[in-house]
Image (cartoon, rainbow, N blue to C red; front, side):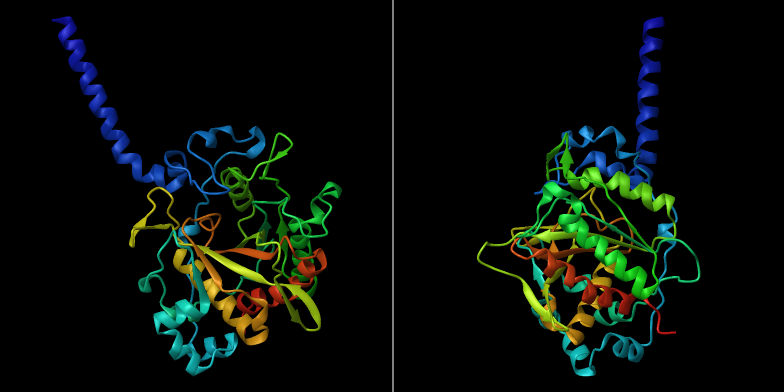
Length: 348
């Protein structure tokens, strides 16, 4: 009789535990638990098992509370056109999804870009202006792959020889020319035990970046700066204001796979800010088309979320490629800063 009661008690406790887990699962997923349920797997990201091998000093995984309260105002369409330099004719053309997709985007074969993903008028009217009335850093620059170098980089001399040094130049321009305080992270997420390892860099990056955002709640923009890799016989260059600049490419993730022509969302790797990400990059792209059209490549749409899910105003930027020189990459920071600030500084 006692054993029967004990078994009943164990069954009852097991059912109660399962019920509690089911009720709390949405909260678990909301604060980042899905990262442990399913890790992103593609070049530069790791399998589930590898997530647990993060360095001890990577910092705790922290959700950024309050981000869900972010709201963006809408500018009158005439003001939006004027500030971004879009003609009425171009705006009308952009409402045609085929035109928009072909002129402004490169869509990775692993994903699907849907007409419902973006409302062009709403995207171009979204007011991304920074709150310049409060103190503290407004922009965070970091590098998931900090050891990416250029044709004449000597990375044995330090990170300043590669993409990190280019990020430092962008920080200087934004602070000195535009008066916007910038925090530049020096984390080396593609380095494990002294060896370069791209696999898993996105997972190693996220805890540190989330902690920075928690410690610096005034940050409104995340820029993950990379250097692209292309065929050795190609160079990505454009002349801007008399200087030879490495071309840049803005990069968004759709969190969606193309499975035989059928779009399927990637469960557990959601990005609540895809709509804002797409609007942010499109506004920057239109600024570049008006001022220096040869400087930007088409916006690249990837299947995964990469580093774009921690703030609404998040962008991944590819600065040139391994065939560009350091000087070309450095020169690219002035037009990139102008693109950013045209979108981020209010006309008021």
